Length: 246
Image (cartoon, rainbow, N blue to C red; front, top):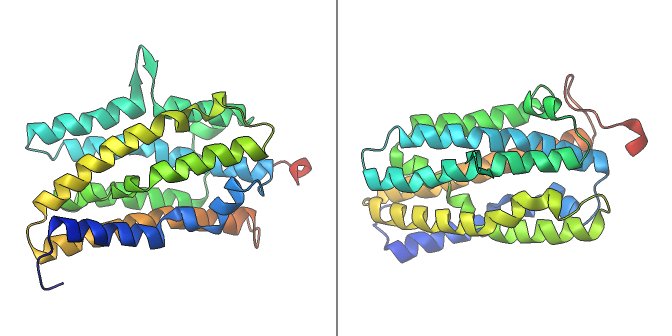
């Protein structure tokens, strides 16, 4: 990139990238939303996604620790509150465990993360290290996948409730609360990077960061599809659905 884009042009590039590369397009997600997954496959997805949820507060705390701007720190603290909750209300992490509980997974097996797919662990750790080690601009830009999450959450809730009789609104409480949070967070981050990316190189870094984050999310679904769909090669030590589930 050799010329500086306007903020509107940068946003257009980001939204176009997300439309092509967001993980809502992955075959596993289409199976999940379309009612084509076995219960064991749904369990595997929820168990592995828990690790991503659990590492989000660590990622966000590391970003806050690098912020010299109090306004940015205040805004980013909302993300910690949303995920960790407090003594009076459960956060996103606890609500995700309500999902895994409702799917019949042992909570200790989930929270220990000992049954993760190796690729899940590596992908999530790559994301956390990226936020800790790259520029603050790139760290903030890494959350821009939230621009596209409200739509996928809506599709997920309606699809799973329609197709799986063991899924209830109560165990999907995490998704019920996420769209407004994601919209708030994404809009703030988008305006921040549009303002702070002041050179063509910085704007390209923002675009490249969104591509990296899309790759992280896609990689996690690739691992699920490879292990639990086709060719069905579950790595040693990873979660194995009960045989009766089919």
